[in-house]
Image 1 (cartoon, rainbow, N blue to C red):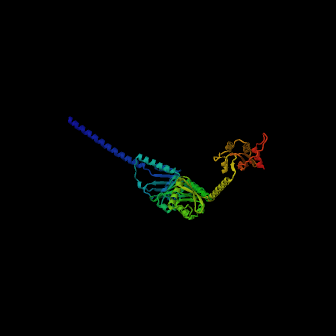
Image 2 (cartoon, one colour):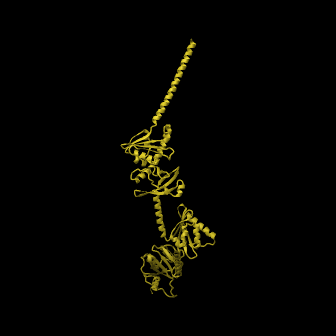
Image 3 (cartoon, rainbow, N blue to C red):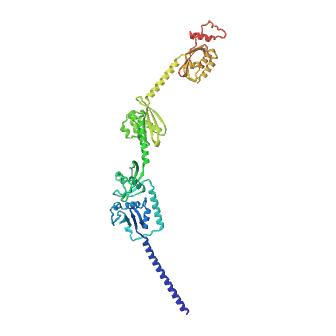
Length: 532
């Protein structure tokens, strides 16, 4: 009995397990069918319903598409996007009438788009979008991948929309197939606020140079007129598949800077043209970059040679051929001299004097400039050198004339400084002449002693500038008498002269007596001799 009971229990348990397995398998199949039917329900068509370009209704995928499109206004965003994908869309709408139904399909694309436009009457327009390659098919994408793609798409879209540069794509026929917000804003501004599709070409890319077609990323500067003002852009082109990607960077600041630089250079050029100094500027490679007309007048070099931007050494060689540089003993020493000139001018301020065989004298000044450039200034100082030599000769002649005088002569400035004296003066009072008048008076007192004649001279020197010549006598350094003369010169200067000693009286003659308190004999005798 027990064995039969166990067998029956095992059979019943097996039957129960088998039933549970069948029920679970049926539930799985039913759940899969429900999920498939749900997926089919979720794959809704993209349908828009507009009344006079105002959105009346749309399916969930259609509203999601509108939310992802840039711009303002439902009709504007959708029509701009459809115009980029389907260029015929702009010309389609005016042809719809009654219950017309027109279908358009994108052809030049890997994922074509099909558009069905239906006029339902009463101003209603129904637009249906479909992907022919994905009809009746659902694509499952995990949420993380979809979120990453949407985030990257949003970053790229916001970056392009907030960029000041113009970016667009156009096909081989020149029609714009895509553009960023900056391009759309500029197109709307030129169209007085209206959005037209296909978008107009703001920059004609067909006018670019031939070499730009072959060189990827080549750039050219273009000008766009807007509202009576000109805006400049640097346009870069890239060929991608069968379309051209163009990026136009704003270049207004660069154009203004280049215009200011050009005007500044023109001003400098006009200024250099009026300078009498000859100017030659060489760049860091020692090629002539700038010169003024005075350089041509001085050197006599051909204008074509200078405008060909010769090197520094070619320029100096041509000057040597024209005998405009000092003639050295040999060419090697001349080349070494020119190397020294170039090195000294590039490292700091350098000046040389060139004495030419024809008698001219040039002063060559080299000055370093930024970025390794160097400038040379050529000045004809022949007249200046001649004047200096003549002045020096006159000074030498005057010194010889003063030294030839038998009287000692000295000239003092208004502040008492010794300006000039002759050889006789140095013999009388010593070779080491002091600098000031007070020192000279001290030497006279120390050499000759205190005497009434010296006191009168001291008073005359300390008095005001004399209008008439003054004369007197004093004891000389070697005995006897010296006559002195004082004359006022221009600028408060004084001319003081000491005459040769007065001849002594004959032997046996008596000196004239003077009363007590009267003028000493030496002064009285000298006064009678001077006044006659």
